[in-house]
Length: 114
Length: 133
Image 1 (tube, rainbow over the protein chains, first blue to last red):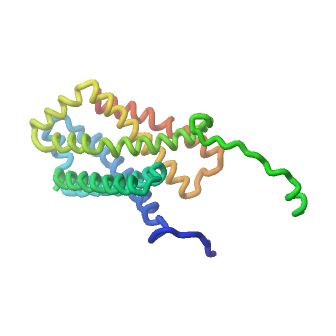
Image 2: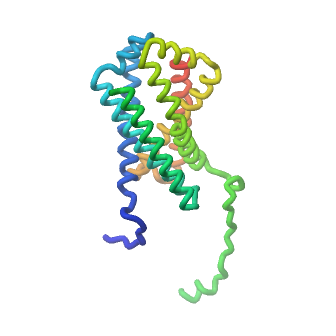
Image 3: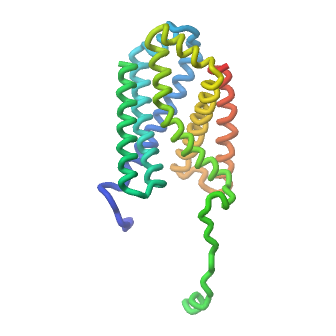
């Protein structure tokens, strides 16, 4: 079956649509993992809190979660700008600003966990 | 058949594009809250990363963060963000099911929109009780 439609841009947006959902599932799994880890370890002081994030697997899981978060937020925020901001120039500035903001957050996340 | 169609006078449908004049059904309220909570979590990423960074960096930083978390205004903001997260989480799971064409009829869609609140509000209260109080 073929669907005819007018396509604007390089792709249909399917990659972002799917990416937002895949990252959502991964983040939900991390959230459940974090709740379990915190429930088991019950960190009550600095050392215990530090040790929650000290194993390599936890650093990898947390950085993966944050990477998913930043990509997910990019797709979501771009949807918001596309829905409400009709002026192309303003929208471009907001989109570039969002990207810089999220890349900066990503750098910060690397600083915390690497 | 074609003649009967052309004879029917064109229906004048009311246009209500003012969002505040339309009575929003529960799934619509839940949906816009999904968007608002997502945007709020996005905007609060830097302070949250800052709290995480300081709390893991040094013991002094950990105590500083603990000090901030004892402030009422910080507790209120974090309570709001916790609710934003729980709502976004529950509504997001609902959307994943809708994407798989599960529960797309009106009755189940309304029911699951209600369930988002049934789950997210108690989850927020439990998380707030454990983390903030």
